[in-house]
Image 1 (cartoon, rainbow over the protein chains, first blue to last red):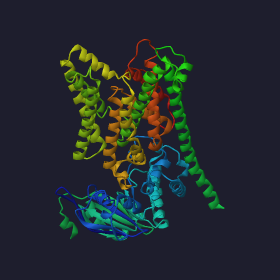
Image 2 (image 1 turned 30 degrees about the horizontal axis):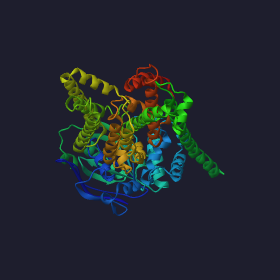
Image 3 (image 1 turned 60 degrees about the vertical axis):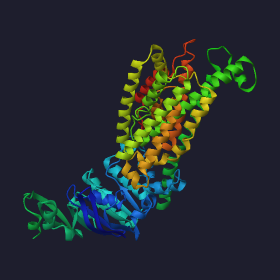
Image 4 (image 1 turned 180 degrees about the horizontal axis):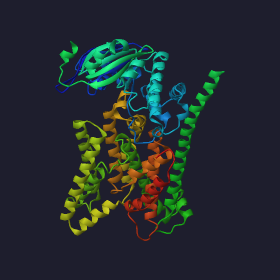
Length: 265
Length: 349
């Protein structure tokens, strides 16, 4: 289990995250929702050990991640970034092979190549193997980045808005892929999301952040209520239940001047 | 049945990838062969009319005059040309990878112009026209100074590619204008010497210089190669490389230091031979792709081939004159590079 306890983080004097508590079990998908600038990315960076929290703890399978070597951490937790800013051409196979870094001493071994080709195979990406990463579609890129993280053979996966640059079909495909990966490989997935409906449809639990604080954390049906949406996003919204999933229909932005207290009461 | 089929396909993917890398290995061997052939040709041609057979014989037995010319004039020059090409090609590949920028080269980081400023100081103030070691030492001091400045700013501001490139470009302008200022103060002879140094020349290459620049260029090589896989990860962004366990700023600072040392080994003894550091990695990338495990040795070999061919042409096409190597590399290199850039439409670049 990935456990986050009383986590706080400040940039200078600005408080970005305050008293965050979160558990992610293996095989489970958790979405972190909230408006822009609410601290979602900061939370993910803390989980990946890229930045050190000011207080609180993060434990992965009962080990403190701050005390791990970066290689050890990379074997436990994979990261799927939003973009891949390479200016140099690179084959898809080479891109996925990067995920073997925590296991490579000097140069990738036969086993590393084997793992990469198996990952490509299992994600139906092997026809892309020797293509240039820059010349495949946005949806394919996202899948390749996920494949790279899977090649790390991690227990947990952190994704930064995996659906943000994709068309509707690819959004569903990528989410479906993550869902299957979580179950099949028994990986705990935590992802920052913008789309409320994709999060509701594909997550086991949703954590809502608002100005650095956790507003609520529960199943999509528990969390997706007009009141919570109103509190967090300052919008008026209807929730409809289709096939057992809550779907949010945003209606109007709320006037800015109402205080949080009024909203919560 | 179904799983059998999957395994076969799976093997296929891995084997295709391995075939691609095997092809790269064969090409590396081919370039090594090309370099050797050009080296032999370079030993056989020159201002004095010794026959090709005499030149080759001179390598293995004492045949008087020919032996002296080949061993004392041509061989050190050939070795030095190869070394310089290897140094500039490798350091260029390293700079481009760790700075994640296809425009990066030893010269965009101001290392070329700081070495130049060192040489100018030596010529104007320390009698560098007579005492050539003064030029080498001062050029070396200033290459170290500029790389320490870049590393210092990076330590303070964070070792991002942008910080380093901007610092390097600022230093380049600073040292160029300082050089111009000293040239303005210098005598006619001094200015002539400075201009000559900036052209680059291999005519003073001797065995002592070879040993010194050989150490500076070849000693960092294993360390640079050790980081090749990390370079691959760093070209895909600092954050994700960090998340995969690469100590990004550490690798970047150390690599810049090592590549700067290689660059100064290449230019301190011979003057600023521009362009190779930029172009050799690009030619290598067009042929080998961006995998640094192959790109680095390929850039080294291609750099060596380019400098050696340029020098050999420079000292043979316009006898009895010797065209400075810096000029020849640009004359041949630029059109060749543009040709490749336009012609190449396939996967890589």
